[in-house]
Length: 167
Image (cartoon, rainbow, N blue to C red; front, side, top):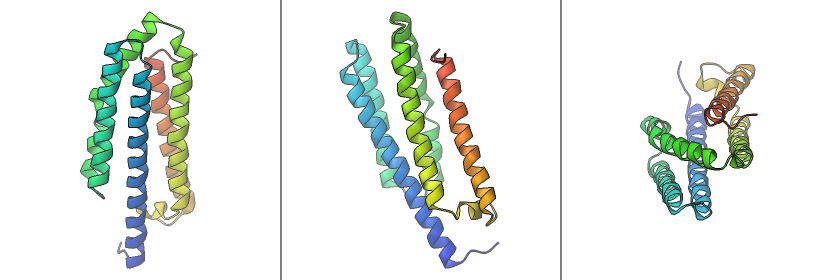
C-alpha cells in the first residue's frame, strides 16, 4: 500500500492533533491534581497529589518535546506507578470517610466524559482514520472509534469498581 503526499500530510496533521490532545490532557491532569492537592485532608495527601501533578507535568513536557514518537505514547501509557499510588491513597481516604465515594465517582465520570469528548472530536475531525487501519471505509473507522470509546469506558468502569466507587 503506497501513500501519497496528501496521505502523508493528513497523517502528520492527525499525529500533530493527537499529540496536541495528549498534551492538553496531560496539562489538564496536572492542573487538576495541583488544584485538588490544595484541598487534601492531610499534608501527606497534599504531597502525594503534588507529586502526581509533577508526573503529569513531565508527561506534558515529553509530549511537547517529542512529536510523532511511538515510544512516547508507550512511556505515558506505562505509567503504572502513579496509578498504584493514587489507588492506594484513594482506598485509604474512602476507608476513612465513605462519604467521599459519591464525590469521587462524580469526578471520575467527569474525567471519562472529557476523555470521550476529546476522542470523538479527534476522530470526527479526521475522517481519514480509516486509512490508518488499512482502508478508506468510514464505517470501519467509526467501528474503530466505537471500539476505542468502549475500551475507555470499560477501563474506567474497572478502575471505579476496584476503588469501590460503583453503585
